[in-house]
Amino acid sequence: AQSVAQPEDQVNVAEGNPLTVKCTYSVSGNPYLFWYVQYPNRGLQFLLKYITGDNLVKGSYGFEAEFNKSQTSFHLKKPSALVSDSALYFCAVRDRGWPSNTGKLIFGQGTTLQVKP
Amino acid sequence: DAGVTQSPTHLIKTRGQQVTLRCSPKSGHDTVSWYQQALGQGPQFIFQYYEEEERQRGNFPDRFSGHQFPNYSSELNVNALLLGDSALYLCASSPPTGRDTQYFGPGTRLTVL
Image (tube, rainbow over all chains, first blue to last red; front, side, top):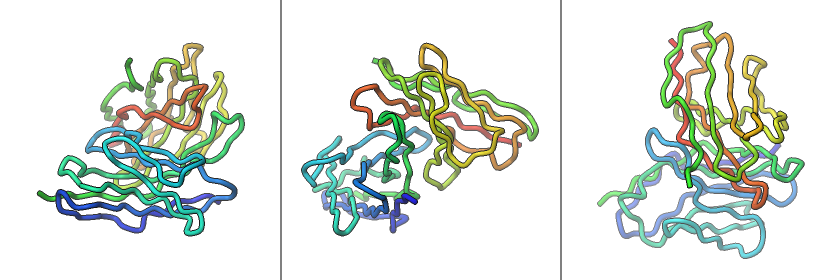
């Protein structure tokens, strides 16, 4: 069964410092991987995805993620954190359904990012 | 361009009642998925609709049902509500091309008393 793990419930970082939010996955075949962010009482906002190609994926708001097949990881990173980045972050893997526009997302439990001034 | 919209924003029901939640996908999107997010948890997949048919279903009981209309909008119905159905219900849509990204609406907060 496909699954996603986010080993940290919370990550604390000072503003201006680099941040990393960890994600590991377990899938059969090549994965489709996603990061979403959720602000309080809001829906999920898409940040970035890995489908194929370059292992370093760039997304919205200066975020990027590195796909590592050997370690089955897809960690979210940002070189310089902002207080406004404080939110709940979800990693997800997409089940490859058929037709190709179907397929559920399987989410991790989420990691709360706290950026302090 | 309006994103995914959901109504209502909040809803309070009592046990045993029935509820209908609504979702309008982004313009040009034809696939709608529904997720349940309990407090402190990641979203859990309920089902997905494409071409007005349920294409995939998660591990939810038959009390959860849905529908997709010709204009691609969708409804989620929950019968015989239980306290454990209290959650944020999220709708996501995806386009016929670039099919891999699902875009989420703001959600409907359902409270069952």
